[in-house]
Image (cartoon, rainbow, N blue to C red; front, side, top):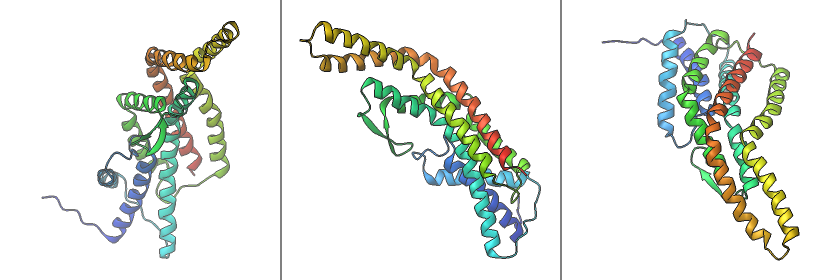
Length: 260
């Protein structure tokens, strides 16, 4: 029978590991989905933290007062949140692309409650989100995130993180410019076809003023948009691969700016 003897110092070290793991899973894609029971996520975080505790070399945490230990805990929580935010920022690109597509198709008002995020989301945004998430899972995104989290304890040991605010802000600003471009690339087929359809409807409105282009245009936009959405699904694996690469890049950038 295996027995584990926890000293007070070991318990403090395990708790710090748990704080980074738990905060990371609170923000990271797939792990932060709200339709997963909180007890399951908490149990998974404890199991991962225990495995990391067993594999990592013991580290002495130096602090003088309870306030000092609280500051260390907050630093670990912020570290996990920032790593999860870096990965989640890339995963939300598809939601942005879906909102643009629904706005062009006339479905922006047909929003629904996404059970994963508990926020109102458009129909195409939810479709893109789940399709890309499924493809990322098949490509091993969850394994990469767990591996990256484990490697952060080698690159950024407990209580040795440095928050370089200027570099973090520059990394986020540089990515936001790519964020918009990538989102438009994903919804480009629908966006381009809708522009052409609007031009055609404008010509028909001049040629046949007696036609109710408002009623006809809405139906044509929805039907055409759904057809393009169906045929453009074959492009989603390429978008998922590109988002996966961007996720790796953003996580590595955030790790670099927090290293000593």
